[in-house]
Image (cartoon, rainbow, N blue to C red; front, top):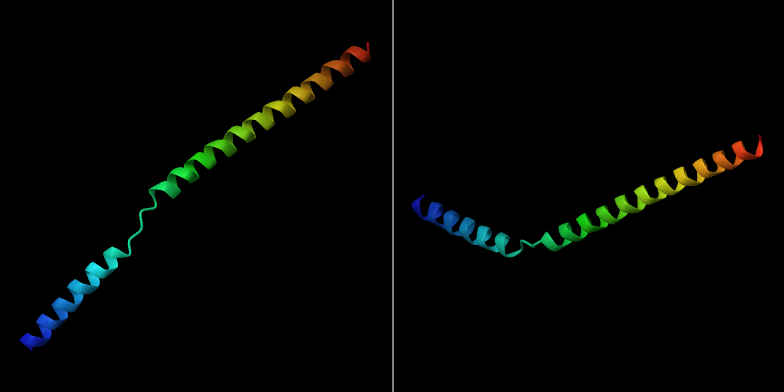
Length: 67
């Protein structure tokens, strides 16, 4: 029984060390995703402001033409 416990403990220690060696650093991917999100948000804001400007301009032109 004592031999089995030591074998299990050794096996678990090896498995734990092996699992930690497969860990991957994803900080670059997370940083890239954050940058992409910021870029997409900025693009969406620019599009919405552009549409608002066009609609406002068309409204002003239509008002001036209807006088």
